[in-house]
Image (cartoon, rainbow, N blue to C red; front, side, top):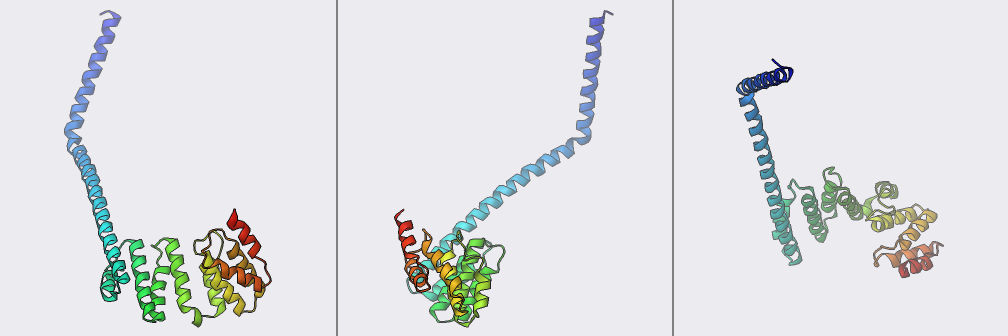
Length: 231
């Protein structure tokens, strides 16, 4: 047999052996492979269903929270509380946090500062909730309890929030500055009030107080605050 014909014959034999091996593998493992493919398809389908369910639940809870806010604005606290109680057990951290803090607001209207502080503390201590909401809850908890807290407790609690860059810097900083004054640490209070006054994004309701208090404590923050505002 010529060499080229011999090589062709060997390739044909090799291909036949491969087809035979594939056929045997298909018979032996075909059911397993099919089962794995089915599991993957079912798993993906289940994930899609779960995603749809989560989005559906989130939409329903968002609508319920909106109705609760309408009830609060419409002086219907009982109706609002019923809706908020449902949302306070939500598995979605954001809705749970907003519901609990809204319940706290209703309690504050009843002068129940202890009950309100407990609601805020529940949010602040929940690690599954986003840090900005937890920080806000801690600031509001401290505000509700402020008259009963020692200055060092307020400072220790809010020192990490009363810093530039934190969205609640102004509110937390003012509470810390007042606590410094209660400790007769006027220098630290003046510096903090000055920082609040110079913050370009500070709320206009808070900035004038900070400028005034910084001036009383010997820190001229008014000029710098005006310059930053005009920039």
